[in-house]
Amino acid sequence: MARVDYPDLKNLPSDTLALVQRLPPLNVFRMLGHAPQSVEPFIRFGNSLLVKGKLDPVLREMAIVRVGILSNASYEVHQHTIISRDLGMAEEKITALSIGPSAAVFTEVEKAVLAFTDDQVANARASDATFQAVCAFLQIEQVAELTLTIGFYMMVSRFLETFGVDIEKDLNRSLDLSLTNVPKNN
Image (cartoon, rainbow, N blue to C red; front, side, top):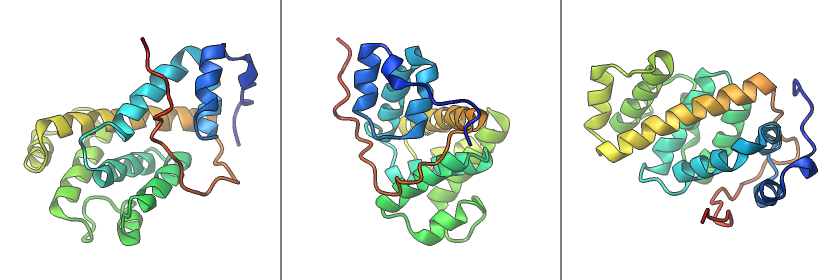
């Protein structure tokens, strides 16, 4: 249960309200209304990672769900498990994300991504060995994107848990997260 009331979105600045109304009806976006100046940058940065990145979407979602698990962020795990299924991630891999990189079901690249995720969540600076292992499979641009994704979803998980954002009871379906209808800054 949320620790504070969700803000009345009608009180948001008109441009922020217009943006929020274009988004899926998620409680995370509603709760962000308590920081209206941050809604647009939050959405744009998340969109850059979810839609515009070069990192394989399945690897991205593995990292995001793993961050949620390590952060005890049930909302994050719930939402990104849906996205993982939509991407076609095997159910045994989704289940094994709670075990982590040692699970036998993962490929070597998946293990490297998950080990890197675990190391970053625990230590901020991944060890040289973990960094080199992930660099053996991914281009440096993808490693940079993975690092940003892990950090962003650590922040999201902390926001969700601090405010106790509720999982939507009536929204257990696929979501269009392309955010292609989000207007660009001039």
